[in-house]
Length: 193
Image 1: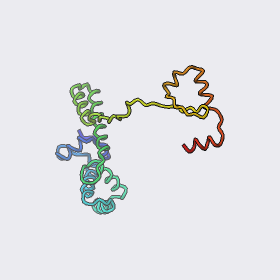
Image 2: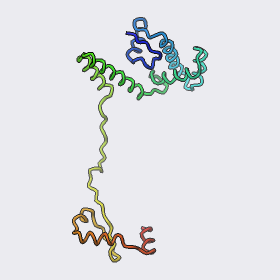
Image 3: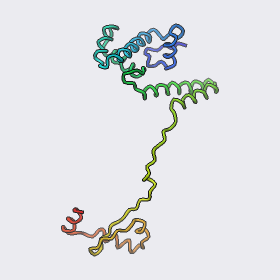
Image 4: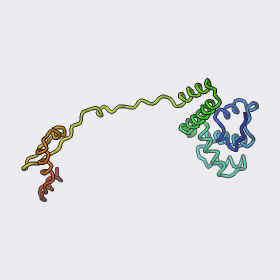
């Protein structure tokens, strides 16, 4: 089954792989074959020339195309071909997941439950297991919070749990003491501590 696409970006991974393995049996559409040759050539050149400007010049000389076309082919080559140049693994995985989701959708609509279940298993293998999160050892420790109360020049630290157990009258006294105005000397002392 050959689909009519204008770009190899729209062709599934399986169709491209089948074309690479047996181009006579699984040909790509004519327009895609030309682009496929350019992208494959760009991938090979990127292995030898890490600077894009060299690759652009050689691609323009070989295929007689514009700079923007060569840049698109280089970007696609980086995404599709795993080699010594920068490989975008996340894009490749996202592309495989997208293809697998389309296969799952097609199998479900056609009623082929056996292929549907196989496709779900393959999708699980592509995605993989959820990585184990490293637990913060201090997260489960009990944290104590203290409120410092200054009464009559004496500083007293009261834990938040103990403050909750105070009577309403004691809480009101604490709040009144917290909001008392202070003079400049007390403000300087607070700022220095």
